[in-house]
Image (cartoon, rainbow, N blue to C red):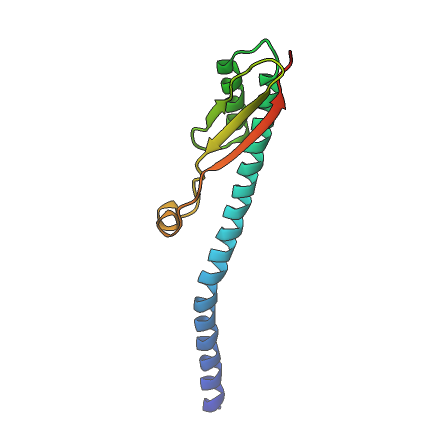
Length: 133
């Protein structure tokens, strides 16, 4: 009977040890999936904002400042953190107009630790459309 109690205690100890070894790996994997999802979501939001900005920039009415404000408002409404940089190529009739949006990617979970290991490149997207004459 004493032998059975030692066996159960031993199994409980092994289970606790296995749990302690597996949980950090599982949590890091879960956080990595969340950050990867955020990365692609922000990339999609930047891409959409650049395309919408290019659509507005090919029109004759709005100024460059209005296009920049429009793109920044789209990104703010999408929840993209940080201050995006928006650049517009010269707008001449019958020429291509390029709207480029760039913003740094900021980690949400343990930013100081992760940024110390990896230096992420800023996210950017350029949309090109032909200006109306």
